[in-house]
Image 1: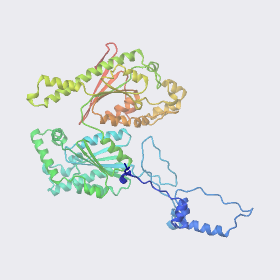
Image 2: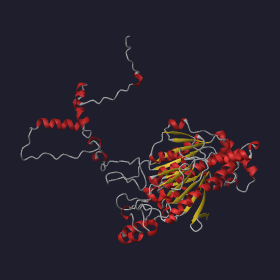
Image 3: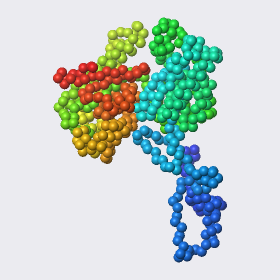
Image 4: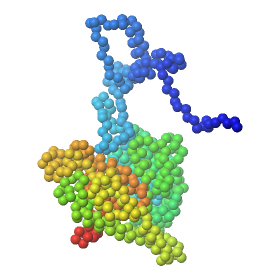
Length: 573
């Protein structure tokens, strides 16, 4: 029986690129004058020709009295590309702009007197929000501002609606007719207000801000062109458009009703206010032009978020800050959940007042660990009952039975609950009483306490005596101060170490308990509670205290619980 020849699918075969050597170039009849340029990119073809002619006339050996010329250090820029001082009429300088990675407190860009020392080209960002009213723009804006400020990029929101409400020209009548696209006078006023806010925004960036957010509907192409044309005159500013789209009718209805508590409808009849707001939205819908072809044709970077991140469309995203914004916006949700944050139980080093190290729990710390497991289980069940009750209310009346309610409660009680600890034993020991069959327990190095370098294992009194200058420097600027020695960290270092944990907290839909350390807890709460950079390093976060946070569309609800050792229980305060 004859064997059939084996065949291959040519479409799946890949051809590797061929790198040509000098012999190949000769065979291809590449001119010889090009070869030195390929071998030494810093050389000039004209210069090479002159040098070859000179050497052809010189003897092969130099006289003893003549020393060989000292070779010059190679330059990254060809000499024949450098500016000619005589031609330019001024001193020849190279201009190099810094671009890309720029992390406050963690990246330092080197500059020299010969190089232009301006900020890097993409160091400032303007985010222009786009979308119809009640589509969640302000929610996105608040979250983004909080995140970027936590990363130490100075970020500020410039809300056009706030300016509109205080503007004399528009204060006379701001009902639905004010937003009618056919009302040319009102449209002119609205555009003027939007541009006025943009000028304030630009001035703030020039004074040292990093990210400015233009919070408005900006729902027409004409308005966006108006803003972008003005920003094109500012070469150091990048522009990012973010459009929020909502197709979920239940979410829209909830957002509509939330608007009634806003400044536009304060102290007004709810029925009339809701009718007026619906008319306002209808007027916007008449002229609404989503982000699309024009932005793509002009290579303007943009991101569309549909139903608060369930679907994300990103185009031409470039620049470090823009990338940070988009990555963050892709990773959060509106699910109701509990986030508990606490420090480990008391350790032996806590008793002696020593920082750092890896000491085990004290007897009081072990007692707290047992109580924490009981407390968390109780709060978990209470929360499940709340969620089941809300879900039951949404059911048709005929389905609202005790059996159905019990089934819903059991479903929420059995939902996933995560426990995170650091990899230091005092944190892991505090989680020992959580049953891994009921809790998803993870030990995470990112949550380790700040590394104190040469000060590890010392008390603050000892640091003050042995390293008085270090002690003073830290007191003067705790946020940026970095402990000396191998592995020493600053608050800024820990912030960037914790960045993946914040993104994961925003992404995850289940409840979570975080058992960590003082500095890490301050930084986590700094993000969750929107503390300022001045407040965060100094906030009191005592041991045996539990913070319970519940993210909501309008902010974060907070409860605080204190462990009472005498009664072996927790009380809210």
